[in-house]
Structures are given as C-alpha cells and as structure tokens.
Length: 284
Image (spheres, rainbow, N blue to C red):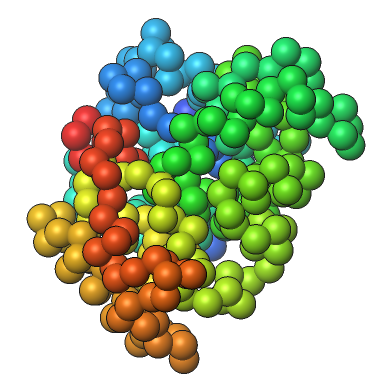
C-alpha cells in the first residue's frame, strides 16, 4: 500500500510501499467513479505527468481536504497502485475493503452532483441537491458498495467540492437509494446481516466484467479468492459462496427466496458497463 503525502513545501509525493510494515500513518481515502481517459495512473504520477487531466483535480481536492482535516496522507486508487505488477494488483484488490476500513476518513466525490449551497453543520440542505444525489452514478457501481460500508467516516462532496454531509447524517436518504438498512450504514457489524441480505445490496449495481459482480463482494464477506477473469459470473459466484460457507457458520442457500435475492444466482448476472474499477486498472 502506497500513500500520497503532502510534503513540507506543499507538493504531493508517493510514499514507499508500506505493505508488511506496522507504521502506516493515519490517512484519508478517496471514493469516486472513474472518468474515461482522464484518471492519473501510477506511471504518470511517478513521471510527473497527467497534471492536465481532470483526474488530477481529484488529487488536488484530497490534498486540500486532508489538510483541513489535520491529516497528511491520503490514498487514491488510480495512482497508488502499480498495475504493471500483477502481484501488487492482486493484493490490492483483495485488500481494498481493509484499506477503506482503516482510513480515518473517506471522501466520496460525486462528480455528477452540483451543490447550489453548502450544508450546515448539522442539517444538510438536501432539497437543493437531493435529486442529483439520488441519481448519482456512484450508487450504481459494484465496487463502491464496499467503499460506502467499510470506512468509519464517509463524507460526501459535490463536483465543486462542496461538503454535502456525512454518511450518518444522510443515512435515511442513502437507505432509500440503496435499500441498505440504516444500521449497516452506521457501523453495525456486517456479519449481523444474513448472507442473502448482503448479496441483495449489490443487486442493482453494475460492473463491466461479469466476474466483478462477485469479486466486488469479497470484502463485504471478509473472504479472499484469486481473480480469474474469464471464468464467468456463475463460476465466480460459486467460488464466492464456497468461500463464504467455509468462513461462516451460516451456509448460504443455493437459491434464494423471491423476497431476498429474487431467485437463483443467475438472476444476479451483471450488466456490462464501462467503468469497472478493476477492468479500468487492467485496461490503462
């Protein structure tokens, strides 16, 4: 795990790889949806390139926000993972939930939400931006599910960097959008929810590659598996369910009732949209 560090002169630099060390400093973490061709990669950042890309504005936003929050380090998936190293990439994907869980704060940048006025300290001005918030693409992506649930503190920001509110203060609105119970949004252990209920949270979420529908749930269930693109969605879910059954006293049923998952696992075949987190990492 590498972090971006704000140095004494205000510049931003990557740390060394901190995997295997016990001295990971307190850090913030970014959650966002990718802009095609506009994100700054690890290679570009290390060579001082990509500053004219829209994705670099996200890095600037994080740098500004962490300083306001009294932090010095932050993590952005696009430029903190060396995708040329397959071992590092595999490790990153399987560690992603823990990295979000370990962050002091998670900044969700909603680039398709424009706030007309900022939130107050305790009561966000929801009517101004609620419609765009409800329609935000961020709530439809498979990989952002764990980014919503794993962190201790989740702060939402509009594309003009206006603070919209915290996950806890917006829990009812988020529940209405996602059907995720409010207790799950406010820190209740995920293993207190049934396997089938947790699977249902991803029902309406999209991934480009069919296997990602299963891989994006690894952290939700606290299990590990190797990535095998090409195995198909059915096989990926079979391996996920096997890992869950081996790790939990609750064995998931091979077919869910209509009231939970709405049928067999085949009913959860993902639609193939561009923008999946891992397919984007592999494609760049």
